[in-house]
Length: 166
Length: 420
Ligand code: SF4
Image (cartoon, rainbow over all chains, first blue to last red; front, side, top):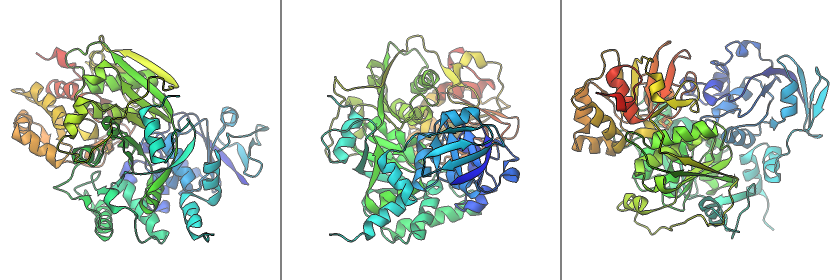
């Protein structure tokens, strides 16, 4: 179960705005997190609370392939991202590190900054408690679900490797 | 049912006869690459996970290009880690400063990519190599580690989209204008999770540098890969670079496309993308009142010798405007040698350009020409997001090498047809 308050943004939030390249000289999540969304919302870092949820419109995470983008947001305490849809590599990177990203346009449409969001991973539902709206996000294909449930791609690979061969 | 080039390559690498759109396949990789920015997180993950060896070091390329030669202590530490990892893993395709260049220029130029290959790279513009009839996709750092240790990776077979170009290109209109116009029509997510296949008589007439530029910027429409079928132009580029035999794969006539876009290029003029999206494209002439303080010519998009020659031809006997800093970034050490050999280098320097050693540098606001607040830059790079080249209050306009050269001379965004 994920619960947190929403930070709502628009469409095409690119990786340069999530974490500008000038700060990408480290892979340290805590260090990166100090600059999360710096050029988009300079107050974000001061406001964000552990467990908070980012809500955005279309094509979230477009631009570069930098995996430090989801690392930065996770490091800042963000528990999940709900968008109308995601840029391909951002989505892939998030799943590969076991970071929840959901496509759920209905919730995006009704949500405002400050709303209380509850995600139930078992029931696969997202609720905006403030607006009294509950929806199902888009399902992950089986292989992606397996990676996500393993906690990321390398967990899945390493688990497969240590499995005894019959 | 017929298949496209991309589908055929996914099928062959996944060991299957056919693949379907949306299907997830585990496919064998022919090449992987990382630079210092994507590599540094990969190395951390690699160590954290306790891996100590890679599967196919002969299929790995490692190099530093973004903040290289190291711009500060932190980037020096990053490049040092990458260098040490390359040595430890016995990666022969490691390219040091002075023998390297920008990944997307150097890798095809060295013959590391063959038609029919499946390539991943820790960089979104890995799509560039599609110009050689290969499937090449950008990935993140975890994917890279998975690829290093297993030699394979999961892929969702993308929807196929085809852009067909017809008509005649007019003077000073090149691959950069074609792809900017395409991004204008499709939008920055118009090709998201899709293949952008470029075809038609105009593509067949394009030189390799323009084809690389187009596949490079397929990423700006969200494409998973860009691709162009192999033809005589590709073959003559590959001659002397790739020694092995390679297949000549084509899309079947009955292949299925989610969308086919036909573009007549006859009326296309030199264009410019305004801040802050590469899709905000309109004719360069509409920007003639925009004064710029900097012009950047180069990058993985337009840093090949042929691109720099276009700029030099317009600058010959002329000077960079007194209010402009014109920075030229050749794509690789080999490009530097080429432009020295044919006097392109000399022409640019004589005109007042600062010609740099190969680096991504200002393209990501790293070094070698970062913008101050309020400054405007016309650049041949591929992205003009807010803050991309420096201060969030600076502005980047994207254009071709010809538009960049004309702009450097006049100090305002200039259509090359309007130069005296
Ligand atoms: S030149 Fe720019 S776009 Fe190309 S690889 Fe370097 S930073 Fe990326």
